[in-house]
Image: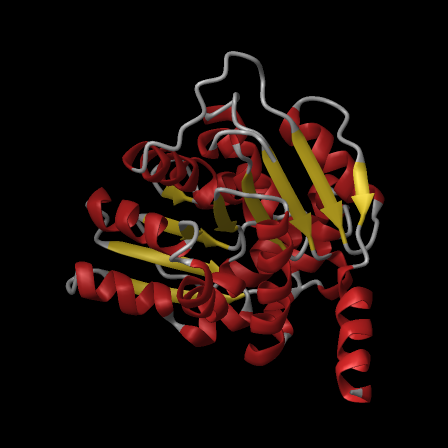
Length: 282
């Protein structure tokens, strides 16, 4: 490509539609930046996969984003950020900045002054415990409660977030045992899609933290520090690749980018399997 380095796209990926909340936040804050999004719908949700599977999926996607000439990789998934960030940072960090969704949110929560927070996450993110470790390191006195929501991300992914009665019942089911809190962390990028229901459930006195705007600000700051912010005047373009197709992904892409976005099916895993077979035959 002949573009200057700063005009290259930002690469964003997740197991499905949840990462669109992060991509949408970046698009709103940096509308002149090009974005390349990869939704690994074939393997969703990452929240119930093994560590090695998650690392393998993320590495394959990161390689694809590098082939698209991306100037940054944003891991728009909490499970992937928990498990694969260090591996991706070690492999690609000398080439492009690699951003996870956990550290920016942890810093925001730590600076908020909340004395008690609840962390809502998938089982993998909960078990890994990075939010608790990092928050406790920055704010040893903060009281932290965690809840693992096994199926909420999958239900959102299936497009059932429009069923408000169902979502309210699930929120009550999962979060009813939380003690009194001053803040709630939506530690899954799918959850901001139902942020209004969660905020209504906990009430106006509880501060809600999610990665949408926080990670977008982190992306802006990192690109600015590196002199990599686009200076073009026209609106950026968005390309969305998926490893499988769902109607809900198409709907959410349109919602977050404010226009019709053409999804492109990319058989990444079939290509990788073919390469493995060739290597085995040699």
